[in-house]
Length: 224
Ligand SMILES: [Zn+2]
Image (cartoon, rainbow, N blue to C red; front, top):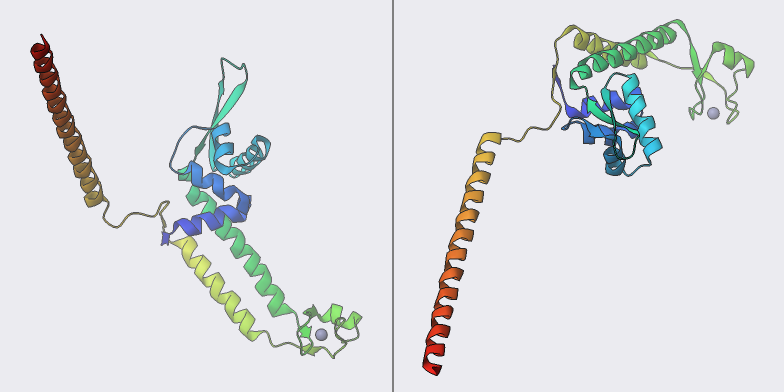
C-alpha cells in the first residue's frame, strides 16, 4: 500500500498536533538543523519551537545532538528527522484508530439512539429517558434512530484499516518529480552554456580594452 506525503502529515498531526507540520517540512530534507534555524524557519519563538520539537521527540520522529557553542558557552540542539520511524508511527496511529472504531461499533450495535426530527442531539436510551424523550434543544419528541447505515460505514472503515495493517506499505516522503533524470541533465547543460557565454563576453571586453589601449598609445605617440 502506497503512503503519500499527505497521509504521513495526517498521521503526524494526529499524534503530535497540527502545528508541528511546518517543522516537519523544514526537517524532512536535512540533517542536524540547529534549533535557532528551525525557529527562524517557522517564524516562532525559540521556546515555542522547542516545545514543538519535544512533542516530535516524544513520538520518536526526531532525534537531537547537543553541541556546546564555544563562543557563547551554552549548548545548542541540532535536530534530525527520523524518517525510518514514520512507518512505526503510521502503524500506531492506524491501530489506535482501529481500536476507537471497534469501541464505536460496539456502542452502536449494543445501544439504541434517539433523536428529534431536526436532529439537534443524539442521545442514548438513558439520556433520552432523563429528558422524558423530549429533545432538550427544541422540545420535539425523540424517536429511535435507524443506525444501520452508520454501522455499515464503521464496519467498512474497520475492514480498510485491518487490510492496511496486514499489508506492507511503501512510504513516499516527498513528491517525486515526473522525470527526475532528464531534468537534472537539462539543468547542467544550461549551466555550461551560461559559463561559455560569460567567457566569450570576457574575451570580447579584453579585446576592446586592448584596442583602446593601442589607440591611446598611438595618440600619445602623435603628441610627442
Ligand atoms: Zn430537537
